[in-house]
Amino acid sequence: MEKRRIPMATSSSSKAAKSPVAPQIKRGQRILTEKPFAFVLKSKYRLERCDNCLEATKVLKCSNCRYVSYCNRACQSQAWGQHKHECPFLKKVHPRIVPDAARMLCRLILRLEHGGDLIRGYYTEHGSRKFRDLMSHYAEIKNDPMRLEHLDSLHAVLEDMMAESPSTVPNKTELMSIYGRLITNGFNVLDAEMNSIATAIYLGVSITDHSCQPNAVATFEGSELHVHAIEDMECLDWSKIFISYIDLLNTPEQRRQDLKDHYYFLCVCTKCTDAQESREMTAALCPNRNCGVGINVERTNCPRCDAGISPKLRNAYKEAMALTRHNLESMKDVAYFDVCKVCLNKQTGVLHPLNVWHVKTLDAAFEAAIDVGKWTDALDYGQRLLPGFRKYHGAWNPLLGLLHMKLGKIQLFEQHAKEARHHLEEAQRILTVTHGRDHRLLSEQLYPLLLQARHEANN
Image (cartoon, rainbow, N blue to C red):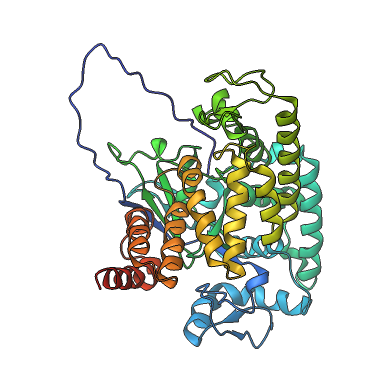
């Protein structure tokens, strides 16, 4: 993941008109499959997922370190090539939990020590990258106090783990270059529900740059990464292929800050530099119910219908935004259904339906309603969430496909087969593009649900 070529706007006029060229890459085509150079299962899943295949299943601990777990002998044998080097270090600190970043650094150090510096990750037949080809952002990290503090704490963990093999721990300069490559090139490995379950480094796909309007998407099966085109492309040109590194359900200011903090660059794509985009994402709702446009509460009148913007609406907007921001921040890990309802009530008639904070609240409320089995509420929130997801994530995003699938599953449970069929067919349309027709998410979950919905809808 380099920085960073930014997609330039193309001119609508040209001196000589060109005949249209049939795209070589079609939407939905898989353009890269890659296994990780190194990966680490997140520690919170180490007793419920296999450390090798990442499957959620019954697992048994490694008999030596008692830290990692495997689902069967085959996975244990497959993982042993890498695990045998870290096993004594994990055994030494057991039963303490090793921070995920420290274990990932440990794996990278050991991988490089045992020939990993010669390994290449291919993104075309002849194009490839080695670990040392990845950008380290050494200079930026050296001047970033928060990063340096984090690195110092990880260094202390590594020295403790590797106390009996001190020569294995690189010097501070070398460790910083490895750390820099990790934090600016690491991928969150996602499960079928788009939950982050592991961290990984992929060499080939690191060539891909960021855009807030991506034309490709990365999905996973276990630790294996797949990149699919979500738009037609004239040819396989990696300088013109973009994925999103960050959560797109944020304002341009938040997105740019995330990219600056984590990847040391400022995005200048049209979505980030368009002032109108920022205003729409934080808009209030026009007080004239027949108008319905988004407005800036600092203005005196609605630009469309000229309805007056009262101090009462201005105050209600500020209160709703402050309450929402505070509660969503406090619910980062767990969304509480009642808290979400309070926020939504406060937003009603005040925030525009496409205000990004309203969309975020609907997302949290939808998941919270599912967690407590309130299916009617979940359907309501999920239906209202669709326009926001479609606008901010894009029409070909896995999260939009999964939202349709969840809605279809709930409607099937509630015996609304025709409605379920519609959502499941929408899920199929999107997920076959983002995941591929043969992905386990489709074969094991979506297709059986769709078959059931079609059968029940026709009876």
